[in-house]
Image (cartoon, rainbow, N blue to C red; front, side, top):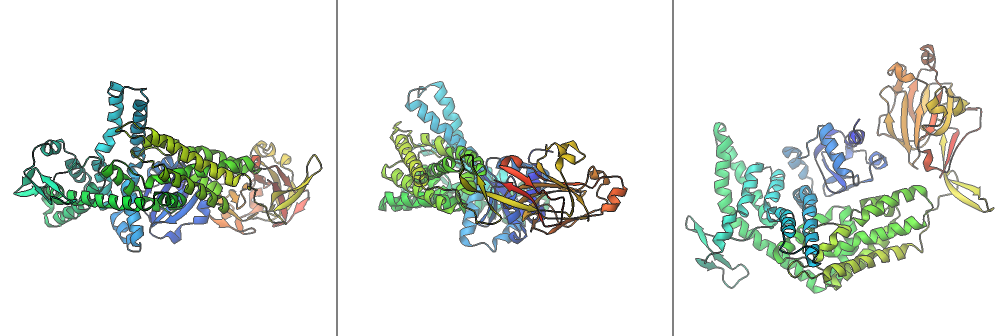
Length: 640
């Protein structure tokens, strides 16, 4: 089995099956499903599933947070589960009827930008590091190395309208190659040559819409503009292009549609784009940029404080997609963005909090979560930190937002500007270097602001952090340490899943069980053919033969209940499962029925090991000392 094959299958099953999936996309850490009915998804089971960080329902999307392996899991779902990442147009349109205007806008922006975000960031990182290398004279600015790096970094941004035309075509359901041709027309090299000549005349002189006219089409002026690296024109052009294409598809006879639909579409859409749609979209971009700058100019520090404080909340609900186009548009129109960039300190504040928790906690499970979360956060990927460490401890998540607010305010105070959309986390620093002057002050100030955000998050949490106390009773145990101190530790009591005679694990006639290779625990010689849940849990594995079941309790214990020895050879005969993989079950709930006598008659022992397979995560696994036990009586105590 491939590494993520089982996880992919489980996720699709728990979102309601592939028949419930309209479309699927992914970003840096999340699978983003659009479902026909989110009520069919088993959200609690998904949240509890090994390999899933959490689930977020926002912006009309059902978001399954995976972490750094999201790309591999996404590819596995497409490859093995029969799901098309593009989704179905008719069903997608039907689903949108119930979406709010905000949800539709977020859905549109995320659909267009998500597919290119990885390469967009990669190209930006190359551009940023090229500027850093030339600004520090490590690489000669006009040398061959700088030129080659410039080609690699600039190519994507220069032809960005073609890339956005592709993603917009998938969103608006236009022929992809026709759409890319429209995008290519926006950056066609001859346009720059035509614009370099003397203008024939000028339209809208003296206004912000002043436009020199260098050529005409059928006597109509063409307002040529520089669309390289632009964002809005390609998206708007494809939106209208899709409507034009559908019109021609309706009226042109089927026999000649194959070439006449694109023929007519391109003849109409490209001139219309260059004469009207493109210029209007560029003007709209300037107005959006002007509005953003106006908000920023009212109070840069307050703007930075607000965006910094709420950026992690925006990310959690997918609302940051509404700000990403503003940032890209500002860079395209003005050459830099001083507003949205104030989010930059948020990831550093988050990992400051995580480091404080890591250094103070005595909880080994939390430590094991915090280490990779901290490392990912250094590079700007904070979902593991948010969902695995701080958000479940709400006070500390709020304190990370305080650190992010301070960082955002400082970024605005220092007038740090984003010149290149590039890497996240520490890879983002070179993006603050002004490529026109090689001025590195922005990078240094960005480092200071992010360091302060990190320090604020760390210092707010380190003195006050305490591991969460558990309630007295079944979950608390008093122990005496070597120096005579009495302290409480967390424990979980697992009840007997079957009734019968208790058998030490060492006496089980199978070395894999008796040697404890699969985990510590106990075995039971069943007196009746029933298996019930030993705790509130999620069914993680249910063998098709019904002879074994894997569970993860709500408190994190991973269990294996194996009915008999070699009973897999019965191929399901004499076993009946009452649950399915992914189900949430309650303590004492019937899981499996089996025929004890028939299994014995077939020549198989029925001794049933009950194992804690993640024994290494616990201080101790203590089985009962009773000689016999009844279903639902205390069987095993696991001590954290």
